[in-house]
Image (cartoon, rainbow, N blue to C red):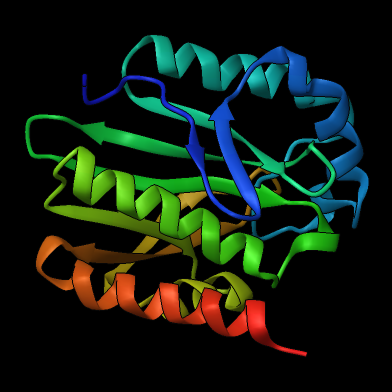
Length: 200
């Protein structure tokens, strides 16, 4: 299997399938749930920019630097968000999991945990990655907490790393999971999913 080859990943609650323009209409409805584009500390497209965003991700895929997915909620068989492998480095067997957003209804749910389990499992067990990165805005407390709950560790903070669309400067927190840490991280994610499925 090529390092940047498209793939579908399937769990109990969610499937990650190759992103295409066929997901556009469902993703428009998803991004409207919570008006996600109004969150200043992250970058989520407005409904009228979603088609262009899908095309941008597909162009990066064609260049070998990204594998974009539509996040399909199995219970409704609809797209509820997007995620990617990005900054793909086949030589050094590293990827970043990012450019992720979900409609508000499924945020802070087991769906995100299972998405990350699927992506990390494929990265470490199929692609044989030595490290998987996560990056987020220093002030995005919700995202940082979610990444830390996965078991990723903070590598450092890139100060004034990016200029945001609103002109503010973003300090970027860089987290990673190493291949030697993966067994413990996987056990934690599986336990969390098992606990959530048996909760009343």
